[in-house]
Image (cartoon, rainbow, N blue to C red):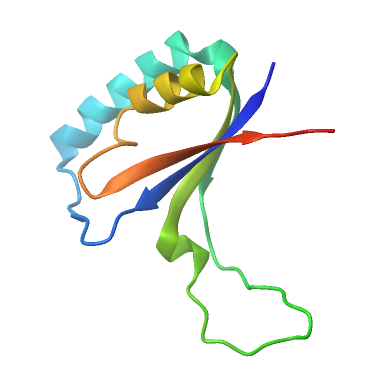
Length: 110
């Protein structure tokens, strides 16, 4: 079954508000239900990204935009089609919200 990389991205001018403790509890409850519903599609839940560096040849000095400023996190799904992968990603609680989006990309293997 094809695999898809899902990258949560911050959109230009996006809103960045931390949820309240009650909102977090509700989100975790919805997240657990989402995991149960789509467990067959979840290959790697990924996570948030930390520090990194751009590797170039020849070596170049920055400044470079940090990936974690562009991409909030990632996960890998398996699905029969891009449309199915989008359906799974769109249903992830808290992943798609005002100020963010999810880029879903097929991972092609030889």
